[in-house]
Image (cartoon, rainbow over all chains, first blue to last red; front, side, top):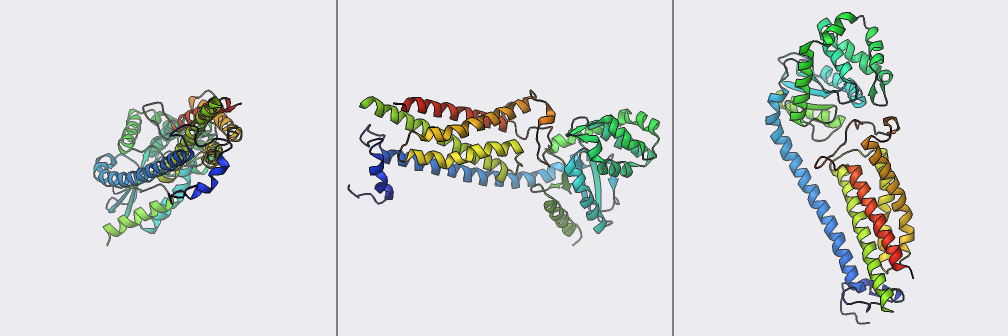
Length: 248
Length: 145
């Protein structure tokens, strides 16, 4: 019943423990030791969590800075479809999959960003068909450039995405149904889709994506700088910052 | 008199171990979603429902030790284990794709994190629930009069 230790205010609860497990049962395993063990474990776990969080955040910031310089060669994408003038000082590169819902959701906002700053933003599009079966759609997109209908095909694919992506699987025949209604020369398209340079561009896009650590779509780089974390607002902030830097 | 005391001590240690795993798993899950900002999928949320309460429930049975806490905790770990098993089978492709739920924004074709080529988040959850079930069952048989 001594109260020599102030650090154990729950001494009061100790008598309740007595009927179940008397404290003198085994030396070293008394309630007080157990309580200290429990508190030590809880503090240790929480400390690890906080330390890991700080470490992770720091690493993120550092790798983003390093990445910017390292990214530039892999982002130089002369052969990719591109919008906006070559003289624009903000180069936005988007890695996307036409079958990706989030990419479709971002698309109008990217267009709005471009429209708000004409002549200042150049957008390059890189294809990364992460969804199963999506390579057909990407090849069709690449081939449609031969007929000058890239943007039309992209917008049609996005607009009808629900009809040809079923449970995250691309249905090739339904892609063709969408392509059929766009006034394309389908025989030419089919031939162009299997052209070796289309395959090479696809390989190049996937290689650069791996190099840049792009595992999710859409991923954006503005003048080589990735978004600090994923989100529409983050993209708008990133582009805004680069615009301010390029056009003070 | 000495034998049941020792058995209760062991049971306490087992339940305490179970709490350690539940807490580590809870903090780990929070790290993935809040710090690394990986969006949790539906199945992850179900596993969280059965994992998170244990962090608070088990200590209530530890101080003072009440062996019956095992009876209250086991239903949670058992159902959580089943959900984790389901997801592991989904990821392994042993359950058809079209049953797989998926959060918008997470491409379903990929596992978000993979260490050493085979350890992914559903696997970690499954291992955690398996160990917790084992510990709680051991505690249950230890503390039985």
